[in-house]
Every structure is written in structure tokens, then in C-alpha cells.
Length: 321
Ligand SMILES: Nc1ncnc2c1ncn2[C@@H]1O[C@H](COP(=O)(O)OP(=O)(O)OP(=O)(O)O)[C@@H](O)[C@H]1O
Ligand SMILES: [Mg+2]
Image 1 (cartoon, rainbow, N blue to C red):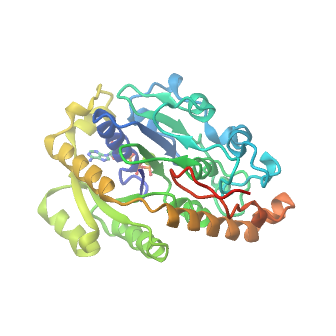
Image 2 (image 1 turned 90 degrees about the vertical axis):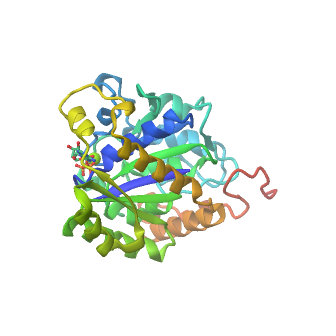
């Protein structure tokens, strides 16, 4: 199951991604936490020393593409593989659990509380947007497009809300999106924007209120986001102490915070996987990107990369060529 944490700058995406990843790992599920934000802080929030951070995916895109394309005859080279290029017969798919494939062994590192961390590496504003061929966050889209995950296996992505995820289709690669909102007008403003865009693509979104102080904050959120409000986290003294440099483990989190994390996990687990929709949207966004910039950038007709005989998901049955 894949989940994205999105929201306004400073709302708590990184904090909640890290807490949730730790919570899921403590329950035994394999969990990969991916830092796909411009400001790379997820490693720190997972208690990872800077010196132990994994190799950034964003600066090794060619290597990742070479692995993923395998011997898929529709993808002529790594250079012709763009962030939206979908897998087909011959592509190498990724699984969670063993983590013995070259992508996980080379680009992930185990954090002290168990989650495996992957990072895009820091990126510039110029890395964002549909026209960017070398987008580092494209590594995450490629990863998710080639990942076959099942129930009880988790990927948690700390995302940048905004242009790139909408333009490329990254925002459609998740089973669930948690929008972190502080109880402020700006906090709920981002929600409206995201909800309207997500609704057009049937992307499930739930709001997580954060840094909430008391019932009037909850009422404010409820008034503005209605039933999309899943749960609220209060301002946490334990999180603040961690920010002040105190050692932190999940057991330090207040009981209400633990309960809220449980609500998030239950919501994610309740979401039914829809591989058919996932495949349709992969193709749709690839065609859009091909037309918008990628055909021109690669000098190829990238619509030809779509393998109509490939079936997304855990099924082993795909049509013979
Ligand atoms: N529930 C909470 N209780 C106490 N402090 C919190 C809580 N959630 C977030 N914070 C604090 O708020 C600040 C911003 O949080 P965080 O870095 O997680 O936000 P972000 O959305 O990832 O920000 P950015 O957009 O800069 O990446 C941090 O100092 C963090 O410790
Ligand atoms: Mg952050």
C-alpha cells in the first residue's frame, strides 16, 4: 500500500511521514519511506545520521532506468525512458520484503526504528514542472510504477505538494493521500486546491489536522473540510523535544498521537487496491507527457512504449507477444 503525505510548507508532512513509517514498522510490516520533498529532512526525522543517508535516486536515474527496463523491447534505451514510461513485458518489477534487488540494495538504507529510507536528493525549483526531463522526483514515479506491493507492505512518501506531482501523474500513484493541514485559512486553502484536482482523477484524499490546539481548532477544520477530516494530531511535546535534539523513539509519542497513527493505518488498510485504474492512469499520464515534451526531448514516439499486453499488479498472467 502506498501513501503520500502532502500539504502546505511547514504543515508537518515530514514529521507525520516519519511517525507513520515508524508506527508501521513497529507493527512488523515492511516499510519504505521516501523523501521526495525539495527540502530533504525525512532522514533526520527518522533518526538517521547524515553520514548514513542512502545514495540519492535523483542523481542516478540512468542506473535505475537501466535496471527497470530490463529487456523490455519497447524501451530502446535508458535515455528514452522518461519518468512516466510504464513497465511492460520484459521490465523488471520491484517487490517489498526481501529488498534484494539492485534498486533497494543500492538506494535504500535501514533507519534505527526499522523503516527503509530512500531519497530523491535535494532539488532545485528548475527540477520541477512537466518540461523537465531530468526531474529528480521522476525517480519516485518510476519506482512506484514498477512496484508490485500488496496488503501489509507499505511505501510512505514525503511529498512536495504542487506542480510536479500533478503534471507528471505522481499524485495518482498512491492508494491514499493524506493531506496535512494546520487549522488555518492557508492550511485549508491547499486542501481545496488538492481536492479539486484529485477528484478529477478519482484519487482518494483524507485530511489530517496537525498542531491542533483544542476543540475550536477541530471545529475550524471540520467546518472547512467536512467529512474529509480523518483525524487530528495535537501539538506534541515529544515531537518538539525531538526537534530540540532529544533522542526520540515512537514510545515517547503521547497516547493520543499513537491513536491517531492507528487511525491513519486503518484508513490506508481499508483502501482497496485498484490495479486496473493504476494501469490506465499510468498510460494516460505517459501519453500526456509524451505529447507535451517527452517525444520532443527524446526524439522518439513514446506512445510506442506502451505494452497493451502488460497487466499491472501481482498477476503473473500477461498475454503472449
Ligand atoms: N504534531 C506536532 N507537534 C509538535 N510539533 C510539530 C508537529 N508537527 C510538526 N511539528 C513541527 O513543525 C515544524 C514543521 O514540521 P515538518 O518539517 O514536518 O513540516 P513539513 O510540512 O515537512 O515542512 P516543509 O514544507 O518545510 O518540508 C517542525 O519543527 C516540526 O517539528
Ligand atoms: Mg518536510
